[in-house]
Length: 151
Image 1 (cartoon, one colour):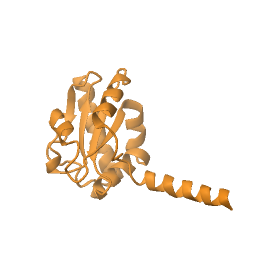
Image 2 (cartoon, rainbow, N blue to C red):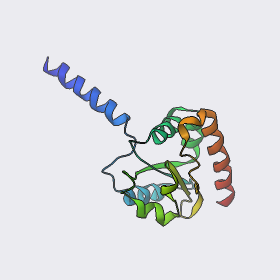
Image 3 (cartoon, one colour):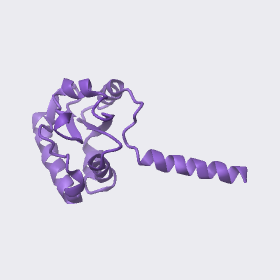
């Protein structure tokens, strides 16, 4: 019985963690630095969002399981940065020029050297839950092409 209870608790915690793609206790600067250090020749997508945000969760699902997943997995490293209730990691977003106040999720694409290749400026993904899987795919396909040109 004790093993079953432990297993059920583990499954519940795993499901809860899956619903929270933005690690609220992570050190964003360190996570980005590590991604850049291991990026080789691959750009890094930094996604600024929050676990309470339905559009952030919709984007995460599309990036993880949708049409965009294969494109992103193959061509990019991804770092998710929690902005809380617009009270966390704002200086990180600002350091890349990402205006999160215009809407989240917001994205910066960085070269392996840390140079900004692309960023959302006007809340382009802030309505991700209504964009459809193909709409998100088309967005990242266009952005990936633009980022590759700047590399």
